Image (cartoon, rainbow, N blue to C red):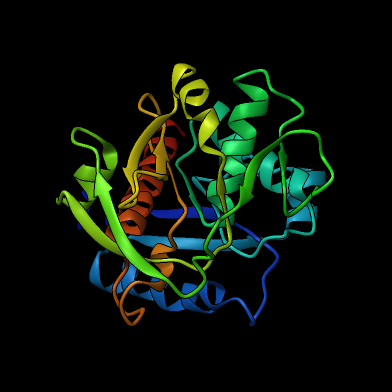
Length: 244
């Protein structure tokens, strides 16, 4: 993937509690290098711990990526980062835990369900939106079936893709209709029909996946979903620069 803004550098927030024990975190530097060298997409990345995201926010970036690594030290920080991207039209990517907290934010702030909880963060809550999987997906690879006419299809260019996971929690399927009715699009499902990718149609770029595109291949080439996010962030940076 190339862009018409090859000389533009985009500033992106990597929201997560960075750890050498989280494999996706260790892949980021290589992915950023691949984006710059192979795709001509230059990203200046800043790691933002979730506690800092909760206290100070992540406004002013050209892109926001909520990475895996849950349970986060601050659920509120991850949720605030999602809300900032959604409300301010900032290109957004959420992966694994980022996917889960994207759903939490949307249910609470858009669907009017403020008490929705994540079972990993608050196991004693009255109502859980994010619940344990019947079978853990840690170390699992599986097929994703892509909904036609979606951003995901545009990025992947295929009806099916095989992706890697490292998670044990997902959406409680009883809430699919509610989330859909309020504008969230479910663009990717697994072989059982369970939701694995969501997006917002009327947004510059807003996509979250339960699978981890950071784990694709050997890390020397960015996954198409990450390429799409990077290109959107560069476009946002170029648009901001043109206004100055």
